Image (cartoon, rainbow, N blue to C red):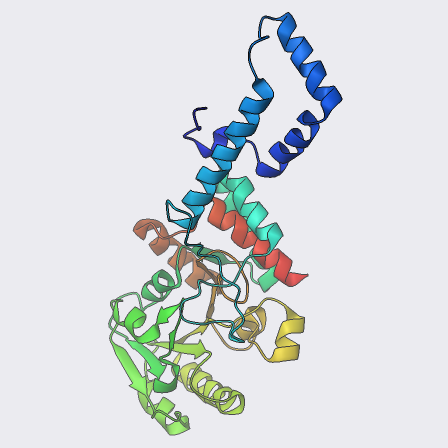
Length: 325
């Protein structure tokens, strides 16, 4: 029995080993290798057979680790034929090969944190049209950090926007975990101008808008415009959470998905873009917007340890750039 390595990085990539096996199994190569080994005193060994046996064992072991079942009977990989992109029971959206490669490559070495964050700023500026961004490990952390400085102003949100989305979470629960009290505006079928004017009255308040919500496209657009207008009158901060957000202008135009860059240009002080949905990156979120607010958020994120780092950040940058193509 050949001992199986206990470290994944002690194994060669499967594709490379399979090519080696193909070469070693050729009769003329095999005889030449055996003759060479015999000259150095390894005449009685069977190195080719040992390598083949070791590779079979290692491959079976890796497959059992990936399946989560020692017998290999359970395979978590699933083909989604439901017609729903965001569906309970499915984890996020599959990454593109280039994004997964970027994650794997970054995971195989140490990363220079400062250089990685500088590059992340450049990628966000290029893909999202903002010179300031902060990359966070999860969307919930972003929402909890975005409240008012003293926690007294409160978060204002429409009832239609308090959505619960598989893989993202419950927006009401996320907002309630912060320091701010949550003020719900309007009814289940929407909020009008008078509702927003009555609810928004202080520059210490934070208006949170969500996409998707429980309204149709036209109703949602009108509600957003009315809410932003009321927030501007009193100086309240506007934050948009774009669960179905994209960075591609073509996707935004063709399917009506909100484009993060456009939302910031069109009234949002901050846009929260989860990365593991239509961006098809790893779990996490990038927040873009005005320099002063983003820098304040960056400081809070550093203190609470929720900044995205390492392979996740490298893969997220790759996902944004792929999405911009």
